[in-house]
Amino acid sequence: MKLQHIKSYLFFFLRILFAIGLGTYVFLTVDFASVWNALLRFSLPLFALSFCLSTICSIVIPAMTTNRALKVSGIDISLWESIKINFSMRLYVMILPQVVSSGIRWFRYRGPEKGKGWEAASIIFFEKIVQLFFITFSTFVFFLIKIDTIPLALKNSIPLIGILAIGFFSLIVLFLSPYIFKTFGFIFKFARDHFPHFVAKRVDKIEDAIQVYHKLGNRSVAFMFFGYLSAHLIFILSSYVLGAGLGIGMDYIDMGWVRSIVLTLSALPITIGGLGVRELGHIYLMGYLGVAKSVAVTFSLLIFAIQILIALLGAFFEIWRFLAHSKRNLGK
Image (cartoon, rainbow, N blue to C red; front, top):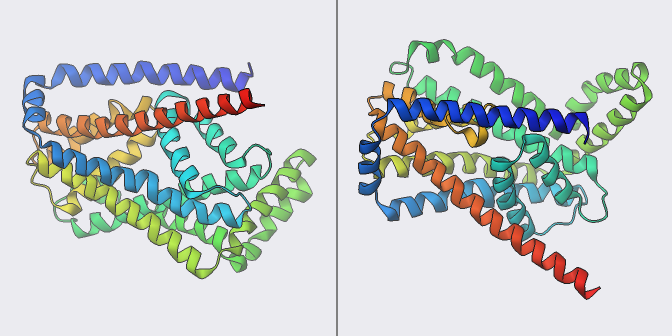
């Protein structure tokens, strides 16, 4: 086993321990009888609606937008195959280290011929950049709208969030604008001329992969941006539906900045599946808006339940894939 993999699994083990620690803290500080009562009162139809919205924003729309870039990159994967990959990745993200789950997705995009590796990596990287842009930009806008009611610490963070949004947007432009790419081409040239050969060779591949996006037409670019924006807004709507089912009196804007911050914190490689971090984030941020601690924890657990259901669908598709692959091998 490579040293990198050993470090990855060690870090994964530490994340498990940290998740247990944070979960224990939440368990000791929350009245779980109140949490259970809130769960019993919650509407199953609203939970089902929130689950459907979450599936659309985290699985279907990303598959549709990614497929645009896949086709331009010469990676021939159907929309249905992209949807199945997204379901499977929801499973692997919860149970495997980030580097391993990202590697599985990269391998699936490459296909059996093992080609298009750098193009697949650039697609995954571009998707992350766009998602981070919409998270930071929407949080920036929501903070400005609610500037009179948000905590002082969050008010002070508005300039930083704005800078981050500009930074992510600049990276997006680098991918999509041939003019901007040529303007900053001296960076790639410097790397090729002054770095070791194995680095220069990879720089060439990265440059070629980025240039793939320059082949996207204006309609494709507009479609991708509309898709990612719609996915983020539907993500907030899904949370708003859950909140309404629990009687949480937060409007869409407040739910937007709370969920955006918690989503960012949960994505950090601190615990497994954001366990503990997500619950504490909801407790403190929603508590500032007057939501009881037990209700905030119930809300967080319902979100986690939706993530588990999506991951279980991913497990189903993985079993289906394994059986189909085994059947083909037996046929041969």
